[in-house]
Length: 326
View 1 (cartoon, rainbow, N blue to C red):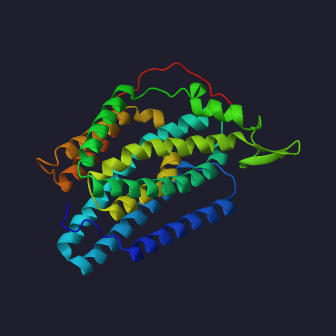
View 2: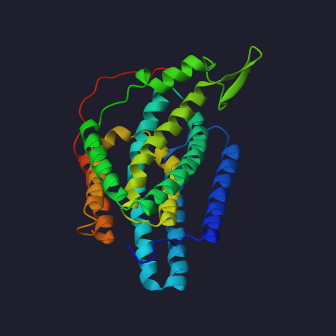
């Protein structure tokens, strides 16, 4: 890490937040203009490129901004932290995508209705992560030993991910889902993209609302894993927030890109488990040896590429067919 721990000024935070609001507003306008439709792989690939380019453009501007303020050494270091954090968050977000696929399949949600759920899911994810990043920064500022707690947590999480990789979630036994169904008025059928309707003179929630709640909760769970991981790369809260936000903004496009071929990447979960474990080890070794950021960036990229290539070369294990449940 550099000697400049915090680059985020109130003006920079405000400007970045305004940028995010504008990007989300454009997304909402396009959603309304296009209406309900199934997102094709071609459209998802195009949007993935757009969001990746947006993240890269911001990273370039951020480097230029810091170069003028602190000099090229700080600018280079912070830009590398941003790129590494973005790649880590983007990689770990793939696990989120796999869970979303399970949720949509369980509720038999048509592809044309999934886009709106995920857009609101992205908004909630950004807000939740902003709060978690703020709390994480406060903990690190007050207790330097919290890095070792994060490190142990990530190593344990990585081992757990490795042991349970490839196993399907059983939403039927999900405690939150059972509680929601037992305490809320839920319609038996979908009503288009609506989250609630008036039924028999009373407000009732649709199954799409249950899907949205599960999407938000799963992202909160994954955020608890991924945010400590990026704090292993940088202690700068603004860099953490920017990398996280751009990774989340492109998550919806990634979902539609992978939705129809998720089973082909059956070894990717092991690669993600390895990344989480390595990041945890990096945090545990901070007091002894600081692993270079460039090495981390190369390692994360290599693990992701190797796990994807291995998934494509090696056939997935045979599974019994199980139809979706409504």
